[in-house]
Image (tube, rainbow, N blue to C red; front, side, top):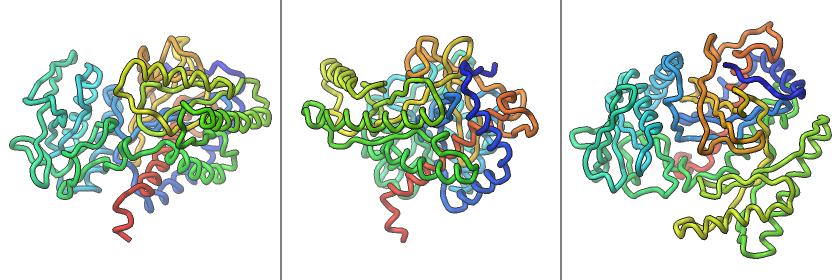
Length: 431
């Protein structure tokens, strides 16, 4: 069940894999020293794309769902990492409250909550799920197809603490990215640990900040490996204060698209890559109904306007978009059952705990796979994906490839730690 690459341009990736394997000790020491200075996000997931000629993260999620996609073989890793993460933050922790997303939940998301609950229960905590959705007035239980049951209870806010009736947690775990805004019920909580912190949520977080931090750490790791940073880093630029109804602003956006495309073309020429470069344009924060727009030419910016206009027509609830990120598009040349696939790596604290392949039969190599119609295939864990197998030819070993994915994912996680430090509203108070 290991995806294959449908490209002859595997040379740079195979060379990168060899460099990674040859430098395993140096890489692990480098990460270890970084974690002495920086605090990893409590948990995260990273979408990785393997183009055959480069390997790069395209999205880092600090409120990951989809924990139900981890196979039973991965659970011991997740439980051990959960123990470490909790002990670092609150060694005396007994009760953990999980805050889910608001609204009606799919069976998939409920299974995600059940898996999270199971992981932390096995880590030695009493775990309950408390919803901050104003529409939930009383406890409700859901029966899952695997025999598990998930109970959601309305969260109660006291003067200084958040909990449930007869349940007072010392730690609160958000599984809600708060895209709709930070509700008052979560503000000014000082006596409990709120994980991740509120400044990790989309009302505050910016993708451009994250990828700027990633660019910094990618350059440093690439120097350690002796490779071109571009092989692990998607080029990008940001566009701020854009009013898409005004021609001058639209011209500025088109110019940024052209600039990023020109930089990518130079790299393609340098490496002899025959593929046609493209960029993706997305909002700089949160999720937006326009999704991700793929552009191959600056003139195609009209496609972005059409998408925005369509959303404005369909709903009055979508706020105008003024800040965008223009990012180098990274192809995925991996296939699973003839469908395009991309690995998603899951981490807790500083550890890789597992992952899966996101597969989409109706999408192409240059499209976003995180869309309706996608399915999930577990990573092949015949051997530990955390332990590389030196001496095996590059491209021939699943554990070696997964280890390389884990290195890139941890690099994105490190970038997220830099990002959270830079945006921490309390950082100045601690100096």
